[in-house]
Image 1: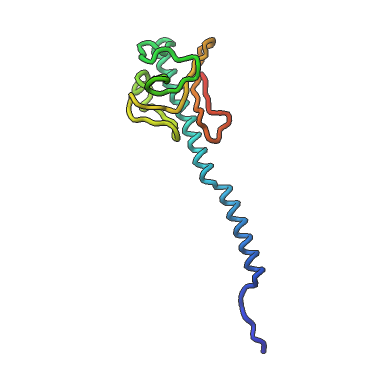
Image 2: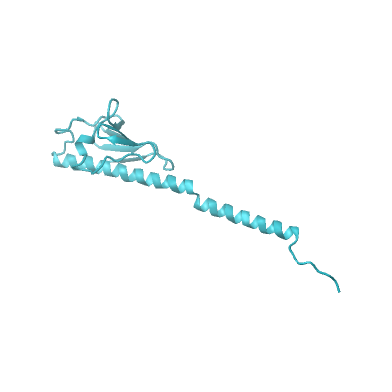
Length: 152
């Protein structure tokens, strides 16, 4: 009687390893956690831009269509300007928080908020000088192309 050894051949092991590698690659591409997190941050940016625009709209409605009534920030600039405290920005915090929005939204990756006098939302605001439409943009999007921008 012949003595047969049980086991797998080298070819069988290599084929199984190849199939496992192929399936794991497909699963990682489908799941891709980095892309999922980037999409999540872009969704947060869209939500924040909409919330800021809604707060500006509500303030304007309460002031008969004029945003800057009794607002220390003044008139919304006609060029895209960062919504932040300090020089070089449009500080709308005292005009909309807490009456029209609970907290100042900040970009999930580059925005910062320490206090009402020390923040950088990571978003920009501009007013069309002809139509008066307000545009809020999130210039640091990760997946959305072009950048997230909403006008009203």
